[in-house]
Amino acid sequence: MSASAVDADVVVVGGGTAGLQAALQLARVGRSVVLLERRAEGKSGARWCNGTVAWQFERAGLAPPVAPELRAAGGAAHMISPTGAHRFTIGASPIGEVDMRALVDRLQRDAVAAGVDIRWGVTDIDVELTRGRPTSLTATQDGELLTVSGRLFVDAAGYTGVIRDQVPALVTLCPEVTATDLCSAQQLVLHVDDPEGARRYLAEQGAEPGDAIIAIGMAGGYSTVNINVDEALEEVAVLTGSIPALGHASGPELLKAVRDEHPWMGRTIFGGGGLIPLRRTYDRFTAPGIALVGDAACQVMPGHGSGIGFGLIAGKVLAEAVAGAADPGGPDVLWRYQASYLREFGGTLAGYDAIRRMSVKLGPDGVEELFASGVFSPALVLPGLDQKVAALGPSDTAAAARALAGRPRIAKVVVPALAALASAQALYRTYPRTPSPRAFATWAASSRALLPRQGAAG
Ligand SMILES: Cc1cc2nc3c(=O)[nH]c(=O)nc-3n(C[C@H](O)[C@H](O)[C@H](O)COP(=O)(O)OP(=O)(O)OC[C@H]3O[C@@H](n4cnc5c(N)ncnc54)[C@H](O)[C@@H]3O)c2cc1C
Image 1: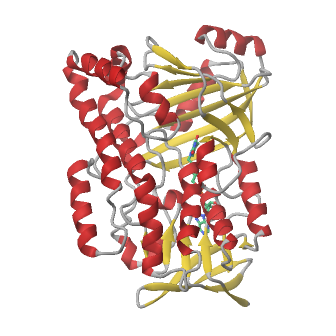
Image 2 (image 1 turned 45 degrees about the horizontal axis):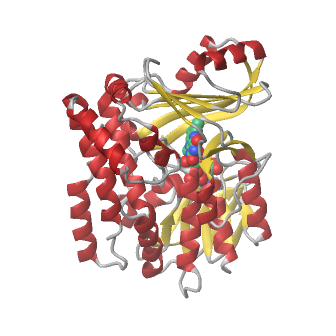
Image 3 (image 1 turned 180 degrees about the horizontal axis):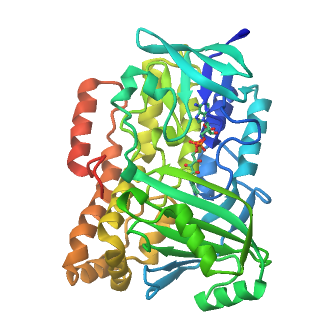
């Protein structure tokens, strides 16, 4: 086998949105970067449509998507209960539907323009350690042995990770995501074969073309079927998701059922599917010489399994921490990335993990009751769609308290989850700024007291 070697400041593994963005931002702060991706050029990362919010692009140092990358934005979102008996509408959703193929292309082009050396079709990655710190890796590319050395290794290979398991310091900190914390999702853009059928469906739902019709809780408390017919009645985007390990139909099974029920939906134009990690982001996702970004760090908003925005932000925060450092993989530098990220966003990710677990525990009946009670309301849902935490105003809080007072069955599940949503914000603002084992142990003890236990179902 022939061999080649390359050396860079930073080696990124995985060319999805999180890896390309980390590579781009690190190159922009003057680092030499090599990115290794298993798939062929033009096939990496998500290949379907994802809902994203503009503020996350801005925080990530990226221009928010515009058409044709942005396929739809600003329509109404109709939220529908498990039986369909209860519903409410949010007038203008903050979510924009983004064609991930175009976003991945944009990040790739920008990364190459910034000087990133991207290697496609790279497999069999084996990390070499020096005193526990990754210092090089070997891999195969086009039948050739490739050796890559660097000061910082970034694992951006998706929820299973690739290098984090090979670094002993991270093995216990970043355990494999348990099956009950994995959402099976599918998203397809389909041709509308029968526009009249689509029009009738929209009329039945009280919806306009361009609106999102979001049914939840039909296959376990944490599940969704989201249907969005475009303005021209030519295409319909369908997203489904659930947690099959809890005994429910998978995302692809739900999607098949939707197509069977709606014969006006025709052939697939594009789309795909996969598993989304729903546990709250790891308490630590760095060790000397290695940092995780994106799904590899579980940087996903668990309330609706949205990992694009928080994964993009991670690359920016990592580059901010590394800029100007003599050793980009130094423990203090990488702690700065971890602490900045968690202090700013950890509370949102952990808080919505509590909400996700709440919906699992409630199950379809409890979610139905949540709708019926009025607690599940635009005031509660809108910040979640925007991937933020916002306190309810006094009148909404009073109304929710009155509604819950008469419904002890759901109150005992909902009240602790709403309390965790609020307390997570305060907890993460105290995440230690420096790598002090004592300060971290104190923080971790508080997190165990305030937040749901990880790894446990529901
Ligand atoms: C159907 C579906 C719908 C979704 N909807 C939304 C949504 O509406 N909004 C939202 O924000 N998020 C959504 N998500 C989640 C979102 O897609 C992910 O959080 C996001 O793609 C994660 O990005 P990433 O770069 O971390 O990982 P990935 O996109 O998984 O990219 C990882 C890359 O690493 C590469 N790789 C893997 N192993 C290796 C290896 N051994 N060597 C080299 N390279 C490797 C892979 O080929 C891939 O290109 C959805 C997910 C699914 C499945």
